[in-house]
Structure formats: structure tokens, C-alpha cells
Amino acid sequence: MTWNWQDKNWPHFSWDSDKLARAEALFMEGTGLMAGVSLHLSDTDKKTLIVDIMSSEALETSAIEGEIFNRESVQVSIRRHLGFSMDRSKATPAEIGVTEMMVDLYRHMTDPLRHETLFKWHTMVMNGRHDLDDVGCYRTHVDPMQIVSGPDYERKVHYEAPPSVQIPREMDLFLDWFDQTNIENPLPIITRAGIAHLWFESLHPFEDGNGRIGRMIAEKALAQRLSVPTLTGLSATLHRRRKEYYQALESASQRLDITTWLLWFASIVIEAQRRSQAQIEFLLDKTRLMDKVKKSLNPRQEKVILRIFQAGPEGFKGGLSAKNYVTITGSSSATTTRDLSDLVEKGVLCRTGDLKAARYHLTIPLKPVAPVSLKDI
Image (cartoon, rainbow, N blue to C red; front, side, top):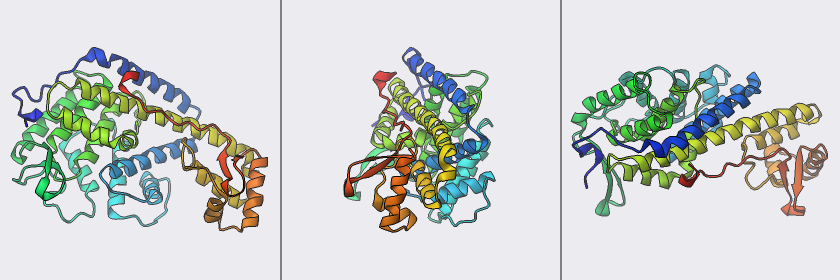
């Protein structure tokens, strides 16, 4: 098997820009729509949106690698690092590390990308790890850097990156390109982000953590070129399409013509952007509803409604049941029945089904986002 970096023309990628023109236009159109809708957010809602997107990205980029974190711990950690809260609830070293990386990305989205930036991110995302030789620096081991699957007796090599000895020079080339294509010789936004992610993953310069850092680089590439830099929220969509993601990267790592990869990556970016837009609209609907009824809710009802809102624009999975209500509030069955009936009467919830099959849903419109496919762009 020959890998892209072994081609004599490496790292000169090629692609059909005409095929990507519509995707680039859709992204810029979506950026304008999001900017317009965001103008209606209160300062509180803006903070909520920032924390929601960042915590989702921290959770999802880790989940892609098989690490499952506690949502509340991650949100508290992000709020604390952003100065929104003084809560000192405990989080694991890994949770702290990934949230620190997300906050650093958010605070310095338009700054140049340097070796030192990547070393800092690596130190953060490897927080608590004691099994690695190289933390906060590029890998130095002489063994091949391979992505493999299967048992030892039947291992499949999906990719082999350049030897460690080549990495410093390769990263110099990558960072120079990243810098130049931002201002001096700018590339279209999605194209640049897609190349940056693939190129970094092809180098796999760290002993571990390359996927998480590579996705942050893609976010940074998208944000740098926007008039109002913001996170697109790629990881949540990539996690939903994890199998496709790995297949697309594996296929793209075998050639320098990356049109197919960039088209697939563009579908992810546009879908992620639409999810972020749906989240903004959902926040506005939430604020309008809560402003209308908050003073008439008892503490139990308010706690449950806010818990449902945490599920986001796609809704509380399966709908809220009386059993869920009891679990969240600790109330009795009789109190639960009265509270839920009152919420229906107030127009906060609507009910479907009867008896044990009864389920309750918010009356504001849910905004699920359909997957974006290549035919859509």
C-alpha cells in the first residue's frame, strides 16, 4: 500500500474547485443566517450557547476516540474556565484537559497556529496520562506510527504515517501553508479546513490525541475566515457519522487528488452549521416560553422543564414520562400527576398516549437536522 506522503508530489494536493463552489456558497449563506439570528440572543443566551457548543464539542470529540465523559462535569469546567461560574465541582483530569483545550481554541480562534499552540493543546488533552513518552511535543519513537484494528494475530493496517524523524520538517511545511492560506494566498473556507484536517491527520505527529487536535485545527481554520469567529461544532456531526468519517480519511490518505474527501467534509461542515443554527433558534424559543411561564412554575416544574431543554433542539429522547418526572424531582406519583397536568394546561407541554404510555413534549417546535449528503451540495 502506498500512502499520500510517499507520493513524489507530496504535499501538493489537488482538487476540483468547481465541484466545491456550491458547498462554499451554502456555508457562507448559512454564516449570514446565523449572524442574523444571533443578534436576537440575550447576553445570557449567548453565554448558554457558547457553553452548549463547547461542551458538546468536548464530549463528542472525545467520544469519537471512545472516551465517554460526564456532560455536567464538562459544562461546569467550561463555565469555570470562561469565568461564568466559580463552581468547583470535581472533574477528571481528562475532562479538565479537553475543556481547557476547547476554551483555549475559543479564546484564540483568530490567532496564528504555531508549534507552541499544538504542544499546549497536546499537554492539555493528555492531562492525566502517564503511559506516554512524548507529551507536549511531537512523537520521537522509532516504531511505525500506524492506525490498526483487529487482534494481534490478524491486525489490519488502515494507515501508516511518516516516520517520527520526518515530523519536525513536515510540521514546518504544514504550519507555513496554514499561515499563508489564511491571508496571503487565501483558499475558500471549507476547502482550507478540509485540507488542514486531512494533512494533519496524515502526519499524525503526536503519540496520541491526533484526532482531537486535528478536529480543533479544522474548527480554527473555519473560524479564522469568518467576520464573527465562532465554533461550527464539527465533532457532534462527525461522531454521528463516525464510520463514514474513518472510511473517508482512510481513502483520502492513499492519494493526492482529494476532491472526494473535500466534498464529503463539506457535507459535514454544512450539516454541523445547520445544527448550530437550530440550536440558536431553539434557545430563542426557550427564552420566549420561559419568559411567559417562569413565574407560574413551581420549583419542581422549573427543574424538569430546564432538564428537557438540556436535550437541545432534537428533543428529550422518547418524550418525558411520569417516571422520568419522579426520577428528576423525587416527587410522589400524585404530585407528579398534578404537576404534569398543570404544565399541559399552561401550554408548556403537550401529551401523547395514555396511562403508562403517556409521554410529554415541549410545545415549542423541535428542530431536528437532516443529514447532508453529497447530492445536497
